[in-house]
Image 1 (cartoon, rainbow, N blue to C red):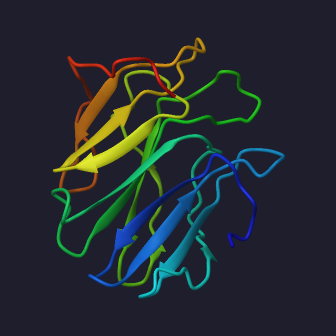
Image 2 (cartoon, one colour):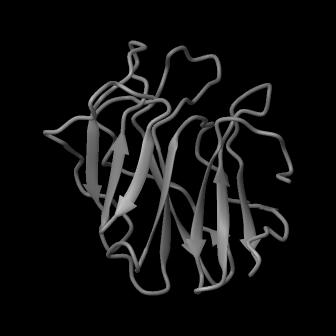
Amino acid sequence: ALPTALTGLRAAAIPVSDTSAYVVVTGGYDGTANTKNVYVGPLDTTGQISGWTASPNILPETTADHAMVEANSGNSLAPTGSAYIYVIGGQVNSTDAPGGTANVYNASFDPTSGAVGTWTQLSSSLPETLVGPAAALFNGYVYVVGGLRSDGTPSPNIYSAPVKSDGTLGAWTKSANPYPMGIA
């Protein structure tokens, strides 16, 4: 189990080899407030997490209901042996209603040691504030779908940004083909 019960957290698996990986968990609401916590757990060959470590490199601000993806050399321009984690949008304070942020943070991840690097706010913020968006990374691009806007309506927009070799993101582009309905 995680060291703390959380809702609104996000997780990503970062491959190390064909049979091992790490799971990184960011943010979430602990029943009192949103958190900055980052936990790392190694996956064993049976798919079990053998324990959690709290990273000393916490998020720069409290965050819940955000999107999260990871980039590595198998899915992006990240150099071999490197990985990057992205925390995208979300809610800063649990009392924000509907709230939301357009901030995008990234941190390097060392697949050998399981260490999370220092988090950096990227200059390529989302085009709009979003709480609860979905995200995926494919073929070198981060895709963000939907999310709750600051006026409380769900967004149908789909945004994409290329992952650069240094782990930063290029400019976000809005798809000409939105999701069929607003969704968060």
